[in-house]
Image 1 (cartoon, rainbow, N blue to C red):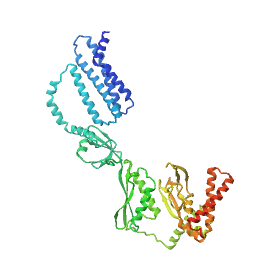
Image 2: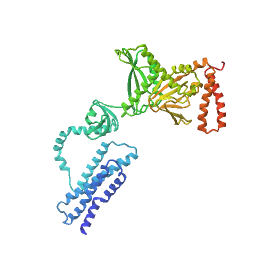
Image 3: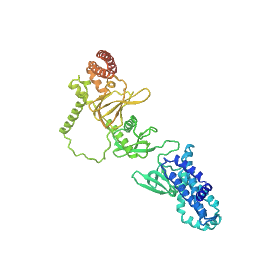
Image 4: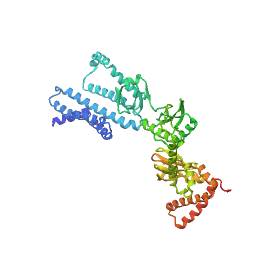
Length: 511
């Protein structure tokens, strides 16, 4: 019983109940933390503190000043003090400062906790009756020797503290140091860890970052994190630069590109005139610095398809030599193959089924090839564009934006389907936005081509208006579940309305 009493007295003198309170509160509040040391550390120290208490109780049974009692008591007090300091430090930096919206760098946290621990250990030593004044005085020479031998390490430690204090480099920043580009993942006492895109980890001594030049990518004071990128391409010099710039810029602005900032908007610039080509560059701002090459690839595809649609070829070397014998027979075969392809595409559209073979062939020759890359907008809702698209390969999404600005997908179209016939024939603005879900090859029919047919045969307007009315009435009948009578009434009204619009749009009212 005396042993238990002595143990209880020692626990009371050591403030074990307060230490237990700090450690328990820290364990409960930080148990889900990813940093295990802030939970396990105080618990382990407190456990050692508890183990020494029964030893003190047993030693006390031997007399007033048993051998070893002072040393064990000092160890017990120090372990308890360290457990308290670590628990209080953990609570301060994981619970209190985040609630106050104060961000304390990791190194500064370690410095504060380390300094508090040193003060607590000195206090416990003094409480145990050990005076350290003489020890400190006699260790001055040893301290100087250790300081000189650890000069480089101490320099890195001080540099690491400076990096955290001056807020120049943050975790997650993309930096360039000594030709190495990567993401800062750790800033420790001695070094900073940078992970590159090649799955390499480079360790930089902190003193190197303090003394040398460090480029932080995508950071500008008061601006969002985004990094300017350049995508260069060359176009044959025979094509005017304003046209190239217009075509590419329009494609870049037509639909959002993933990870490309909306402000500043991407643009196209003329960079250089060479012997046989003009060099251009797309300038855009990357919002996710980790994904640079894939985003460059998206931009290049957008440029490629825009140039193909406009008939603007990328340049070839000036010394390129074509040795294929281009005979008249070969030219004729290629031309016939192209005519057959266009005729097959146009033949899929029931809207022109009443055209003669000659008229259909003439219209087919007016088709313009229009490829699109994934994510590009073929048309925009509300735009004024007087042409029809026929999908040869690929798939697109039909999206409609409501009055609140919310856009939703209402349908998908694939090979053999077409859209934009109402805009072609009546001049109405686009009723939906069409976006490519896959690489798409289309053929485009402009108003001017169809207008030439109407000039020779005005009565064709009546036939087209009737077919267009039937097409839209059938869609309305299915969507609105119209009865046969209501559908017939809608068809008659739609036929008259569309005929008026077609005649007005093509200036046929006086004919």
